[in-house]
Amino acid sequence: MSNTFSQGLLIAAIGMGLVFLALIMLWGLMALMVNIRFKGGKKGKKKEDVPVEAVEVPAAKEPADDLRAPAAAAAVAAALRLRGHAVRAVPHAPKTLSPWQVAGRFSQFSQNRMITNRKPRGSAK
Figure 1 (tube, rainbow, N blue to C red):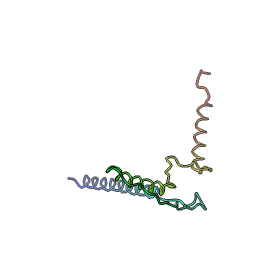
Figure 2 (figure 1 turned 120 degrees about the vertical axis):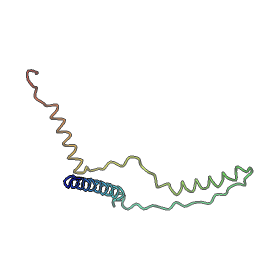
Figure 3 (figure 1 turned 30 degrees about the horizontal axis):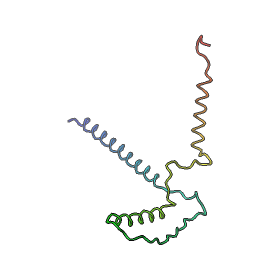
Figure 4 (figure 1 turned 90 degrees about the vertical axis):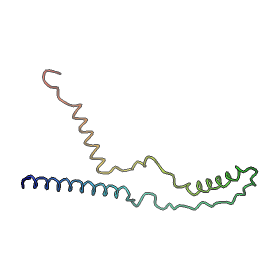
């Protein structure tokens, strides 16, 4: 191989390696940003512990009832514990818009206005 060809291969390999390294760094940065929890939101509200009352379970009459009673008790205990941990599929809409949203909406409105207010071309009126 010639010296120029091997230099070209080396430069191409270094360039491709840098591109993939930058992509991996961006991927990690995005994963980090997803996991950041911002302070704020619900201030002054604290989780209250829900008191759990003792419930008497009647004696089992059949072998199948031996498994149902503990399973039902575990389900009720888990439901009481997780009562305040509901998950919303759609986040709450912010009351104020961020500057990015304002700029994006403004550019969309201005582009739509330009499309509808064009001057006619040529002989078409």
